[in-house]
Length: 456
Image (cartoon, one colour):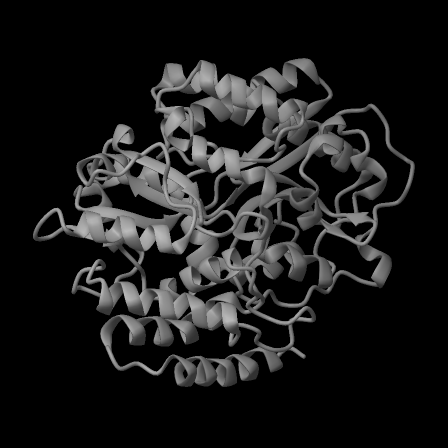
């Protein structure tokens, strides 16, 4: 998965409403049982890599050729429109017959698409995909509603703590044993900040909706929730929510380990990390790839571990996958499932063809996507990553080791609007020494409840 896709998922697309579908009756999204044949079938597939990304495009086209040779009755037609899914045009494409048979979707939009009957129920066909039984239940659950299935995952990740191993060593810390608690983060941050002028022990977002996003990540890791179980009211004005802000306030004003420049957002922390003077930040493993590719960092200098205190609790997760056009025929659904099994779910093939990725000069070794956990396919993928690694796999070992005891937790409804509200509280504790945490959380709760009430 690219950082671009992840960033779009978290910062641009999440929480945007999709216009209600006009697809007919409640049963209109169920393909008729039977009637399938082995005759020729053509499927259109969204999110083909664009020509501006020649290496990934080349790999995609090679995979299509390989797949079609093995399945001569199936023709795969890729569609490379960008962005891969656009809520503003989604319904128009569906109604106009231009929506792909297999359309790309972010986790954050799956629930709305199911509720609005904008995807086919593929339950009676998905059993033909052998890999489904080995997928992580929490990952597969994203595409399920009760006992019905509406899609398959392509990517899955959860948040972690990205840290500068080089600075850890300079500060007398052990880069192989990164912090597991926020107290340990505070201690490490103070030592890194003490290295000299310009060094920042721990960096945090507080603007452009990114502050609220990181608040959610740190809240989940402490066992808290952003909203109630029914999604109708805010739940972040809690002991866990207060602990998030109190910890940041102490690091900023008592420890002086976060630097004086605040109101940071998306690229700011990665630029600081690439510059070599930022010790730690919350982020998914692909942050390291972005720092390396876009901000002059080096893979060897960075490591990733779990978000502190998330052991036995939750981690903010994200990802993407494919769902099926509600008008797709049984033949198209069956053919589409064969393509997804080959290209997205098979160790050593498609997106997991690490031998090819290494030959192309693309990075291999990041611990994402994590679709299988420690099931047999997951272990095989892990072994292949290590075999063809072009980045230091051991730097991600603390993150990988922690995953077995952490549950993925998706972003809340109305995520971007809630994040904007919580930016205010995050920026307050980082820019005002006298910020009243209780007041700011209470104010945010009131605004969040009004936002959540709009769709109830």
